[in-house]
Image (tube, rainbow, N blue to C red; front, side):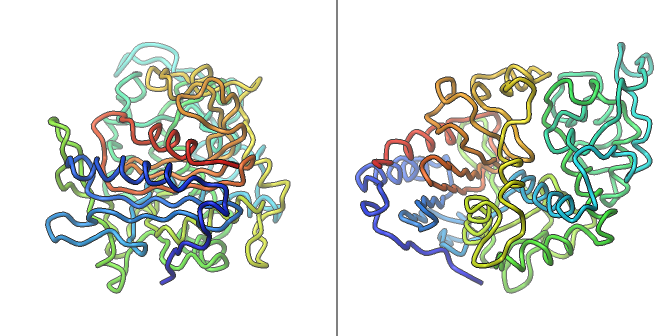
Length: 409
């Protein structure tokens, strides 16, 4: 176990201590009002942590405090890790962005695309072109989630028992085969739709590497980077540090809910959202990206590959709102935000919902966790709590605004 620690004075790092205090007081108020159980926030400049606050409870009923060594379900923040794993294989010449997915997963060799109708009356046609690995990494594959309730193909995912993105009783290989048996919503590369694509990418990593996804992550990413608590399961010695998961109630409060089955190795190794990690772990991962592929003498990726990962890949410099295909993506928070390989990328700061630097990249998790790297300001930020909201809320834009106010140089 390694602890994240404050390493620099805020003023020396170009941060306003009073503004950072406002940030802490803002989220402490959310805790005191019963909207969050607790939180951890860390802000670093030049790789040195200049602000670190742990506040509230990781387990409300037990009265256990949030600490710097608390473990968090990071859910979709797993996706950038899966992207890095795939990029490692690409640098080794074992995988390419332009590989047809069907080359590695034959079930995807002849994808079909939704044309019209629904249910038994649905009509499909052959896809106009192959589904490529790059489409998985940019969420332009035509795959979807069961919970959108916005398209007839979403309903097919629910009928297949994919409400939690995993086929009942199946492992990653079996679940991905179920995905392959369902039509795509659109021709690959023509629209953006956040989806189960990272699970398919995770299965490709398994096939290409010859290793289970958790083994590959541990040997090729977590071990070399010193991410000592990161993984798809929580051992006996870690269990006491794992934060409880809460859901938002109709009244705006929180109540305990079931989370990822992290005790014991899971049958389904989700490249989309299966990880738990500490703030120290994610600081190490962010540092790998901020330093363009190298950390403490360990190089996992070339600078050029990290640059490729963290630039916008949507056609014509489009943002998520313009290129998004579903009503779920037609929201102000997607304006000015493009998408790279497993991370969002700010393409137009003048149109973002909250202040953001050009080229800032990162991602979030459904339990209200977030990280981002701002290359222009040499700034990294991470935030954790464990609340699954009923709908979108203001935590992330508030966090971005408050951090922006704290940067003085």
